[in-house]
Structure formats: structure tokens, C-alpha cells
Length: 458
Image 1 (tube, rainbow, N blue to C red):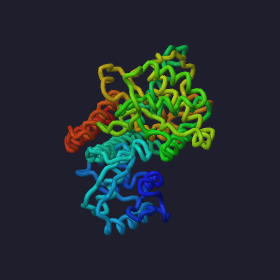
Image 2 (tube, one colour; image 1 turned 60 degrees about the horizontal axis):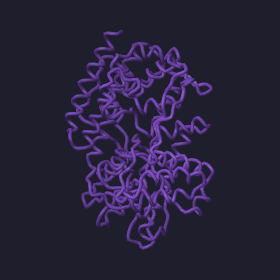
Image 3 (cartoon, rainbow, N blue to C red; image 1 turned 120 degrees about the vertical axis):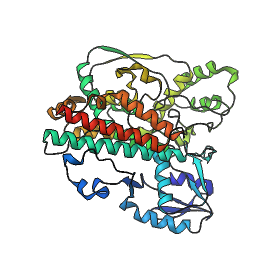
Image 4 (cartoon, rainbow, N blue to C red; image 1 turned 90 degrees about the horizontal axis):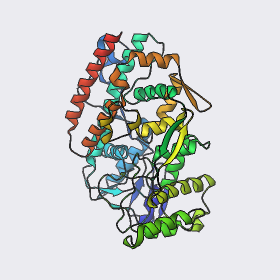
């Protein structure tokens, strides 16, 4: 990613562990390698909170506290040294709330008060990289609210349920983990010759992971593959739950014409071009309006000579993503399929669109997904690692511990509708429509009620 950004300055010249300098010596580019901070541990709020004690619940600290990651120490030192000589900082973090918060928090921690320019990094190509006219500071506020809210629910309910069951190891309970566990339990009882439909549209991260998982690629491998392709400028930012086509300044005609040169793409691309007609003109870059990650994954047309140098896995993923968007432009209809098992692909699909398992269908009008696109597969791995479910031959099964956990938690914590309400509220914080304090007040009240309900269930 840093190399792609450096192309704007003639390439890279000197390399170090955490940063590089550009060929024209006008800029230094550092990389965070993920989040730059963590949530404070319970004992860092109050020493007594290190231990599991019923009288401490609910634990509701007066403020959100975050700490710098120790492993980022050399990055902090390098960036602070360079900032002392800089006239501005270009924020080129990934185009989502976590990417915004990671860089924003580091700048705050290092005391930077100068000019910050946000770049649109949805696609890492020279033609698409440009300054964004929007201020995405509220994104960072939303991400910190999410982290703190997840911490409050997770730490209080994990301790409450673990102490109630007298389990030797802590039982994973969480705002997203628990409704997903409940969905897996329900999904296992619904396996039959079900009719369902695959929506024809650009892919998001969960759809790509599910499709590749059915052909033998693990979700973790698929996520790393997609991120690697993004960092090489081959596809737009893949960690999205949105499956709409991005708006383009001038249309899709040239984009389709260039993709038609790839093996297996000509027929679909030609059909899409015919459907678009003369109203769609030459290609352009993405329009820069709204959230930067507010569309499905789109491939960046590349010359055949570069395509031939991609790995076989990259070529397969590139064709898969290109075909999905082309079919949507061509007006292809939904395709039926049947579920005969409930494993990782099915769980990823259900996390990405909870409308099919909502008890209150009216909640499906806004956000329809639970969990972050980058970490849904990690959550499923944690459910297995913590002994709540087993996974064998791509088939989940609920363990005795998992069943006990579901029996002990309040019903609202198993309801994806409650999680959707949270996600919609976080989007309002990200859009600047809801204050952090108002969101956290609601969360604090909800956690207090959860603890009371858990005590009544004991």
C-alpha cells in the first residue's frame, strides 16, 4: 500500500522498518500494520477489576480509555521525528471506520495539531488517489464508540455468565458473538432442501469468502488474498458489506471494454455494454460522495501483460469479482440454490444479511449485517477455539458449553435485531448525526439491564 501511495511522488527511495521516503524526498510514508491502539484492560481502570467478583458488575467506567500498542513503539518514534519537520500530514488510512480511527488516534497520541489532508483510498491507483473533500473525523468517534460498547457488553456479560456457570475458563459472550452463536444453533435445525437465491450484484467481503470457501479456500486466506490485491491496486477496498455498484463520474463503458479482453469475460461484458446503450459514455473514477467504502468490490482494469503475471489465486479472484459486477450491469437475475449443510460459508452469508433470520422484519430497512467485514471469520474461529461450537467437515455443531451459554444469556443479547439497532446508531455517530455521549449513555443503560436480567435467570 505504501508503494502504491509513493507512486504519486515518483516511487520510493529509502526503506526502513516502519516507513519509506519518496524518490523526490518530498514525503515520508509510514504504515501502521493495523490498529495503533487498544482498549484499556479492566485493571487499568480499577485494580480490583482484575478479578472476577459479582459485586463489581456492572463495570461502567466514567470514560473511554485507550492505550498505544507497545509493538508500535518504533513507528511512533519515527513518525514523531518526521512530523517535527512536516508542514502537513496526509491521512491515507483504509477507507473505513477502523482505518480512520487508527491514524487519527496516532496523530492525537503524537500531539500533531497541524494540517491533515484525507486521501480517498478506495482504489490504490494513480488515477483514483485524490484528496477527499469530506471530513471523516466522526468515523473515528464511531469506531471508538464501537470498541468501548463491545468492551462493556463483552466484559460484563462474559464475567456474569462465567461466574454463574462456575466454568473454569471464561465463556465468550458478546454483542455480535452471541447472536451469531444463536444463529448457528438455529441454522443447524433448519438444514433441509431449502430454496434460496443468490443475489446478482458486486461482491462484498462475506460473499467472496463464502464463494471461495466452497471451493477449498479458507475465509482467512480469502481475506488476505483480497487485501493483497487491494494493496497492489487490483481491486477496490474489499472490507465492505455493501453490494451496490459504485457511482462513476462518466460511466462504465470503457471499464467494460477493457475487461472484455480477459478470458471468459467477453460475452458477459458485451451483454452489459448492449444493455447500457449510448447513454453510458467513457470511463471515469469513482464519484467522491458519501462514505468512501459505500459500494461493492470493483476490479481495476489492468493490461493483459500485468494480468498474466498475477498468481493463479489472484487471477481466479479477479475474474470472480469482475464477473459479479459485470453480471449486475448486464441485468442478470437472482440464481436459486439449496442449502444442505450449515458451516462457515452459510454463517458468513447470514452475518452479512440478517434479514432472513430477523424476528422483527421491520428492522431490516437500514443496516442488514452484523460484525465487521474484516473480522467475521475471526469471530467464527473464536467460537470454535472457545469451545462453543465444533467444526468438522465444514459442518458446525453446538457443544454443551455453547448450549449452556445460550440458555444463560438474556434473550435480547441473542437477537440480531438489537445488534442492528446498535449498528444503525453507530452509523449515525459516523455521519455526525448522533453524539458520542448519547450513544454511550444508551449502551450503559442497556448493559445495566443485561446484568440485572442475567441475575434473575440464575
